[in-house]
Length: 113
Length: 112
Image (cartoon, rainbow over all chains, first blue to last red; front, side):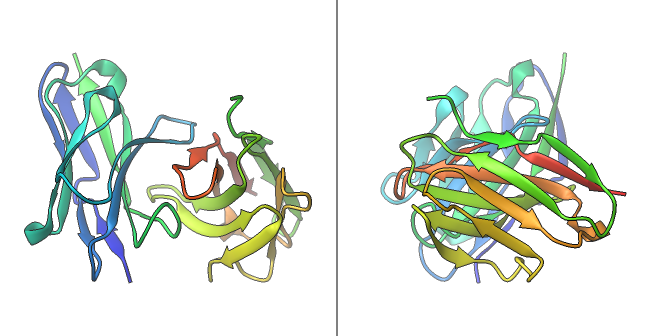
């Protein structure tokens, strides 16, 4: 069965600093990988996805993520964080496409001035 | 594109009561998904429809839960004889085929 681990429950960064959120997945084959963001009281928004090809994927709002098969990781990065990035971030995995998506437990990002 | 709409946004009920939530997907979307999200967890898949057909149900969806999408447009999720453990955010999402899901803002259920 597929699973996702987000080891950091809560991260605090200063505005303007760089960000890396960790995600490790477990799946027998090459999975479909996603990062979603959720603001308080709202639904989820897709930031980026990896299906195949270039292992460095670009997303919306200046985010990127790198797929590393050898480490079973799909970490999310942003070079300079803005206060509006404060939210909860979910890594997710699926065996194919957007069905049967399994989400991680999330990382809550706090941005301080 | 008016987005995915869920109603109500918040439901408070007593244990043992029945509750029903409604989801209106984006109009041209033929797939509709229901998820449950408890505090400190990511969303967990419950079920999904393609048009009016319910194609998959998670083992999380006990006999007390039922979902319908009678005309392939809006969907309802009913929970009968609610229990404390049903307290959660219930999220609906829709998509056109196997495309990215668009999520609603959810219905938060609180069981007294």
